[in-house]
Image (cartoon, rainbow, N blue to C red):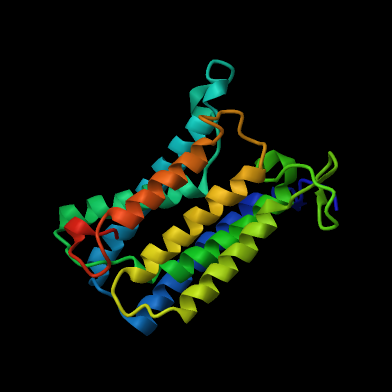
Length: 241
C-alpha cells in the first residue's frame, strides 16, 4: 500500500472524518432513543453546539501549542492541525459552560460515550491511511506488525488507537455504570491514560517540557481534573459533563 491514500482524488482522512461525524451523530440519536436522556431535545441541541465549539477550539489550541516551534515559519492560522485530546477536553469545557448558561444541574455526558468511541475509531482509519502527513504515526520499529509509511517500518499507533477504543468500550460495557455521569467520566480517564502512554512512542512533536509533549501534559491535567472535580452523581457545579 502506498501512502497517503485517496479515493478518486479525495483524501482518505477527509472521507473517514466525515464518516466518523455522521456515524457519531446517528449513534447519539440512537443512544437517546434507546436509553433516554437526562435533558430535553432543545437543551441537548444547545449542548451539542457548545461541545462542537469547545472541541474545535480545544483541538486547534492544543495543535497550535504542539507546533509552536514553527511560529514565524508558517502563517499562524495554518499552524498545526487538530488533536483528539484537545477536542475532548475542549468539548467538555464547552458543555460545562453551556450547562451553566442553561441552568442544567444534571450530568449529561453518558449519551456521548458510544458515539465518541465509534467516531474516533473511524477517524483513526483515515489517520492511518494518510500516513506520515497526518503525524499520528509511531517511532520506527523492528516488530513484525510495523507499517512502512514510506520511510521504513513504524508503530501503527493509529491502529493501536482503534484497538484501545474497542477495549475501552468493552470494559465500560462490563462495569456497573448505574450512577449518572460515571460512564463518561470513566471513558475520559481510560482514554487520557491511554494517550499518555501511547504518545511516548511517537516522535512527531518537537515541542516538549520535561520530556513530555503538550498532549501528554494535557492528558495529565485532564486526569487530575476528572479524578478530583467531583464524584459521579453530584450536581453540575461539582462534576463533569
